[in-house]
Length: 439
Image (tube, rainbow, N blue to C red; front, side, top):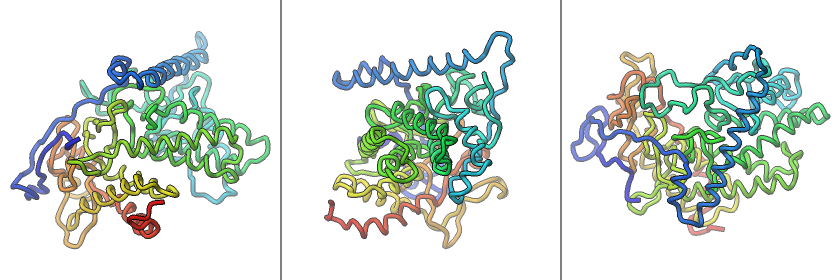
């Protein structure tokens, strides 16, 4: 592709960075398309069968999940309130001493996780896992409906009472699986069998949810809209691929209870995910850059997500992808090229001499000049490292973060230093893999 949809020169604080451009609305986000039989029918014939089978499997699982919940709700039975929504997604620490995972506190969290596992094998998001176990008839997931919905909002659920029922968003499902593995390891007796069984079901969920091209949607069974896209946002693909890589390679460690056959499937899925990651790295004027937050599952092109998340390049998610790619042993020449291109983009995109203020600053968060500050990176770029862009709730796309509404300036990480971790990792990786020495 020549370049992403928006062509502009960006100004920060109204100061032109190229060609005299000043703060402006430079575009309007368009909704991502769902995966449908009609869209699949437009694919080359050799690709249709796998995608139609995937769509059929997703629809059948969605029906089965809903039927399982309905069967628990007996006539005349009071329906329990959904679990409380907790945006912190707390209760599943993965950094405690190994002995802690055998304590009653940790096992209660694991029991709660097992109780809320969906029939498909995944989990919802934004739930405190240290809370009570799921009751019969209780929803599998919290409400998770945006408080900012307006007519035509990209985040409007297809069904108000069936939303994010099985998701990789906000580190969901992969975090539950990591926690279960730690508790299972600390509970080698039959008392840990429920945790091991739940873990295996969760791995099978990831395998079922994986697209024919190797990516993952944000929600599975499919929910429609941007949830059907290949989702790098919140590291959904990255975390799924990394977990499957760990399962495949850690035969004698935390996952030694996983069968050899399932480990082999995990390895194949991780390799397939790598194929997808490489295929979706965006080219601008023939040169590899980084990745978008979401890519259409059928066309691989960048697509928008929420109203304020446009179809452009994303530095934060790309940095996490690069760190994962650099962790893989024996990188091919193709993989090495992809890594170097992504790191080159991030180096060029680094911003010095500015800070993004805190929410308690007068007038809310702003990008302001501060001598010696940096590096920081904009979250989104329109194809070039010199062109950051920013989205608002009304779907408008701006070239100046300070022109956004207060709610969006305060409510999203438009500038941060997270991509620095990719540059730090690259320092060691590049020494181990000098240019021209692909294995």
